[in-house]
Image (cartoon, rainbow, N blue to C red; front, side, top):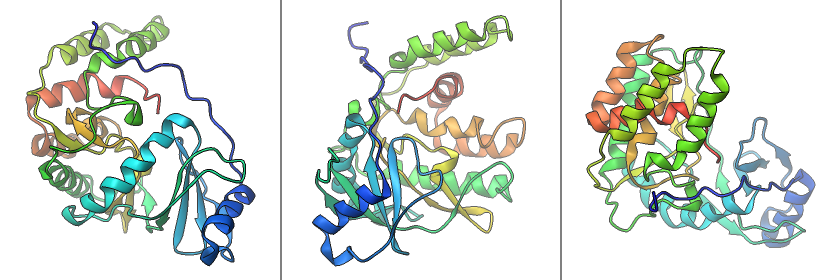
Length: 279
């Protein structure tokens, strides 16, 4: 299909050290030069994350493709934040290439919280309701001028066929290890489900590491690098990962029924959990 985006090759990542990040800060933001720079444990896939003192964080993309999101984040996160029921990152400053680092980068305020896990979610139904309220609020924000799917978010929000080669390749690898026929059927149903074409805001990567808990409850949502406007089905994949139907069917249904119409639910059920994001 001619209108299916080409994901292109996998990103070529660069390494970024704490010493290098510290030089960037000292050169471009001398008011913060005396603050220690230390790597954040499990600091992400698309960006290297460093503590800057106790209350700030540095976010440095580790490939050219991921750096495309920097401008978008600085443009839109300050507008999205006031309309959302939970804290999200809001950039404090934008850095430029330097100290042998080739991309734009960001300084954010640090948001406290523990990444969500199966064991740390105290009440799955309450968690699902908090998540549903957040996604519903995000979708209610005017999307008319928002960023359309593109390389900046690996075409999240566009046709599910963008990821067909990946999905079918993964199923081929699993053949012989499990019965892939039901997954093929589900994938076909997902491709046939129709989106009504109304653009809405989506986060794009509501994975466990981007959902922060406080006392076991959802307290903040981070990492908007793959956000955009378009088909919101990708934001419901978490209902079959962290909120698996086997573990908490009521919580999963509470989320999808509150946020997604049947066609969105079908695409999320059959499509997005079945593939691996390149981002």
